[in-house]
Image (cartoon, rainbow, N blue to C red; front, side, top):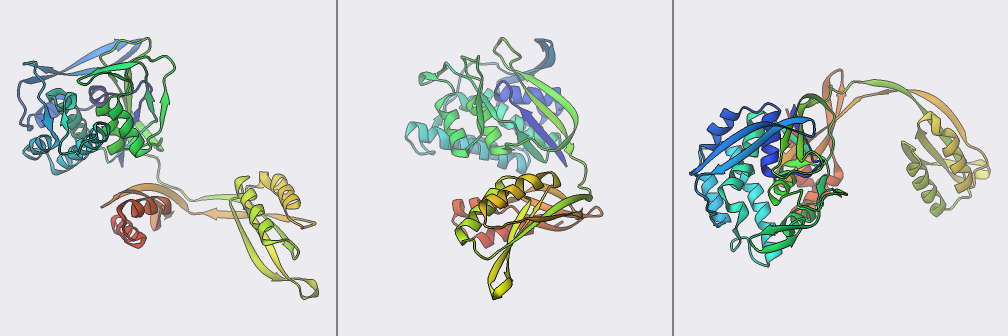
Length: 390
């Protein structure tokens, strides 16, 4: 699977994201040809190779031939995109990005998304940046997009509404709604992450570092000159090597008890799992003098035997812990994401001899979507199973 990872070490903006894709191998003429399908006029695209702070990269620009900013409502932008000759996937994902931005603007300004009219983002250059990034991903064949945490700046930013604190209120609302991971740049007293880039990455990317075989790296420069490279970096490649079966050793720790309360046993299990045990379980047993008892079992890496055995001796009434080391054969495991009508869900695949023999949806993902959409959990599970079929 072809994937991309966006490294936002200095924030991101729409033009920077497109510049990084171009620097990593996106064909400029192919991009221009696709964007010509938008019913927009009076602009031209430029790309310039630059070097900043010892790094080479691309500076992408949308140059307006007539300097006027149209104020468009969401319905105007949706009609513009739907009326284009772009692919169905590009149209759908682009409109999802704009709707996410509209919801944030509406929340910030206390209006409905139908009432919101875009200023900066309604301009030709911003529309081209946002749709162009989605087009670029499709042209490169990117099936999954990932992102680092988003670096934020400080100070103030000039907007149509006047001077506002950076990050811009719409940017923060987008991040807050998605629970996106962020960090603060210690030296930046300027806006680093724009609403455009925030909407694109929150809508299209997963915020984690994937296992990947890197094939190309691109740098997209921003307009501002800073004391460090004002760029976003994109890694292109494929998902990591196929999951392989493995063999290792695991320790089995056990102890028998007939005089420990359920509360203490439950607490001991929590402590052992937190300390690194791979699995833990209780088995009802019969002990001497016909007393009902409990066998407490743990699986753990062998190097944790001293730590876990001490935990068992301290947290339970047992006088001894027996342990042995067992050889173990493990099936290959691989994580991938699938699309459902309510959003993405991670699925764990079980692999034997190169063949996927079972898959298991991630419960927390399914539960989150079920709660958000107010649908039965079983319905989400079924959608994941359907999407996981070859």
